[in-house]
Image (cartoon, one colour):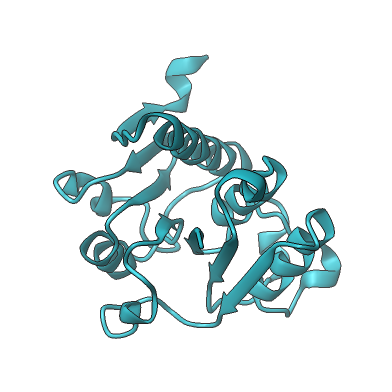
Length: 186
């Protein structure tokens, strides 16, 4: 069984999970999707995350699961209400593919040390970084915490880049680091 996990169901993770489901990966690769997040949907999340008014006060993973099951009702989606740490990461099979979409530095570190294959998506201001190996430690120095500036474009770009990197991995077996300033594209 091919399992994919998405840690962090906020601005990047909610979009990424939808990309995974809408691309019909279940037919080719994904048998089960894990959504891991401890946070609750708040009104301030609605501008840049894939949630709606009716989702406010619900756990992000639960609300996202409901949305994704409206797209593909046959996909098995498991949710975990927890904050990722070194003490609980062992709950997850290290062989499953992991997307880290959390802004928590300890979560990023735990993922890089536990999973064999992963993509860490980080956003701060207009810079998006996709990290696929632990040698690229700079990514952990930004994109962490609530003082980070994120918007819908930055989050969407991070989700798209992470998703495209994953699709590239499926066809070539290669993962690589990416750092892009969105302003350089304009």
